[in-house]
Image 1: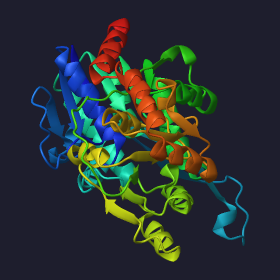
Image 2: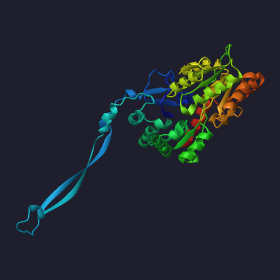
Image 3: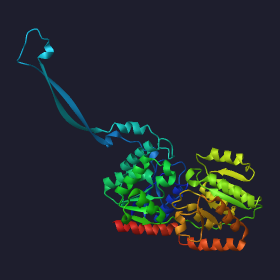
Image 4: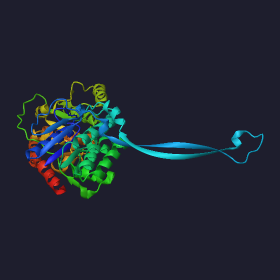
Length: 424
């Protein structure tokens, strides 16, 4: 099957779990024999997956003559007449009789806005010009889809939904909308109404919707009025790694994720302070980047935890497993976590996880320890037990590892493949 896959990021250039999920599923489908063409807004470093064809949309110029638009103009015709009743000594305006007629004409010519879009660079980032880039990306994908036939278009998250809708209209093929999160998950009460409308339109046009968890499915039904019969839940996977855990001087508690309100890095610092009250020999490591970086650095300094908490910044995904193997516990205190891919990767490395209640990954790993995201004290209690009770720790790791055994990207690809064939 020829699959046109659309995504905004892909390793080695990523900002978080979305790119990892795109790679995992694309590779899994290619291993099943599908021909996957993956269109990215911009390719920085060539991806290393040789079985997948990649297209760099930033290198494609749009020709206005290929995008025709209907322009309607209205011409106003004024007719001046003179009344038959003429009265001496009155000015001319008293005798004028002006009538107006409107004549419409329609002309089809190249879309003039294409010239403006050509001046907008596709950066592949999440910048202030993202909505303009999204429109240009959609037109580039539309152009590409006219040059090659595909059997299905598979779009990851809202950034690619408009492009997928245009391909569906042009080629009359099934369109799969793959939700990894929603705008409401990411930004809560600060969610963009414009992005929510793009997500809703993506849901309307999609033939099928993929959600990474039942929690996300319920969100789509409740907040977006999606048809439950259109939604299939397929969890993310992981690629198992054989990692040797080194001996470390201090026990280390880790946080990995975007420094954004959704991921709650500030709450992790509160948990660190709670844990240091129990064990001052602990150390903390934070991996990630984002708009909260400066405020997080200031908070650490203000409460005098600089010597206990290290901010490592963003690290490439190929180095994440190595970091996890040096970490004794990962805490995921997110406000909203539709899945929580990092939990799979941590468990695979033999690192226990404490995660906020309601995270999608908990549906598939029932023994993972869950805490209300606001409950700093209980995070501390559970973390202290995992760090000090070796028997409990090992039992929890083994149970969670057993649970993730079936959560591979190949299995996710097989489930997706079944969905494709149901749409044919």
